[in-house]
Length: 342
Image (cartoon, rainbow, N blue to C red; front, side, top):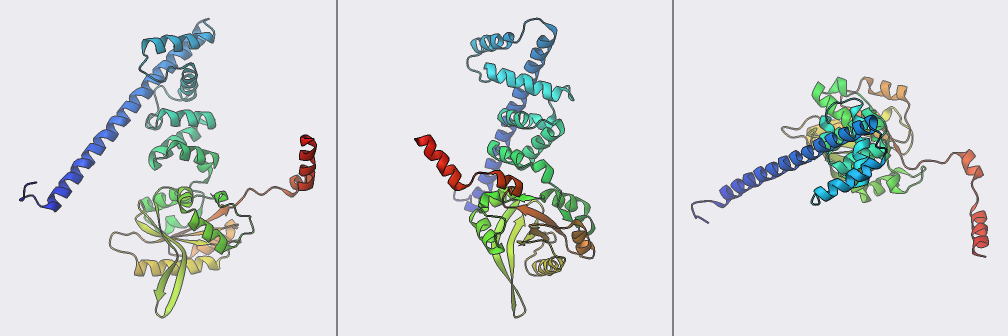
């Protein structure tokens, strides 16, 4: 390397060069994916028209698959099963669109197949396409979010963001919150105590971050804040890279009480005073509780000047008592197994 070229200059130059290559590669991958989906759209359109206007019957799709695989052996995607999926996909979206919707064209074909297999409502399907692009979900994550009804939870938390944050920040913050949060991955019963829940959330921090959503960075649990000669401990502290602010999460094992908002308001003031730096936005607080009363929450937040939201969480899907009463006991199950073995 030329001695006149300092190490720092080279590091900066090579980093910028790598970034350009990454960008070009991503654009190429996106372009190829879009072209494939546009091709699939045309194939789906042709098959739908032939299915409707000819007397070829359903067998023509299998014959089409045979012909296309013979003509284009190097290309994947022309199996009979995939052609049926293309036809289903085209019919699903062509009820509203003449061309491939923008959000749909931005995600891989495997994601598209998953969405039309599991989501029956067109608006919900588009929501998951756009959410996949925004959050960069892989297919497994997308499937988890669909199964957990992510579209019903996003933005449902009760909050005061409109009154305490600028319009753009308020919109981003409301979209970052869900209600309820699903903590069934902890394997805890509904009567679990706060410490047990917090312990397990920390042990399963990767799954917790996935449930929270894109942008959350975990900074610590029981995070110590010193005020004068008194130590205070935040249940969990995060930083949100898109909102550019600290997120304080307080966990409550029972129902929401109005005094929780006052305590969290105090914590947010201390975080803004002691941790917030130039470029950071005001800290946001989230109270996660097992149960909340909407009126209680709205009154509690009415005169709070720090941004915060209140959401519920679910540990397990409780089995109703009337169903439990009809379920066989352990002894009955064991007796049944013994009879089978005999």
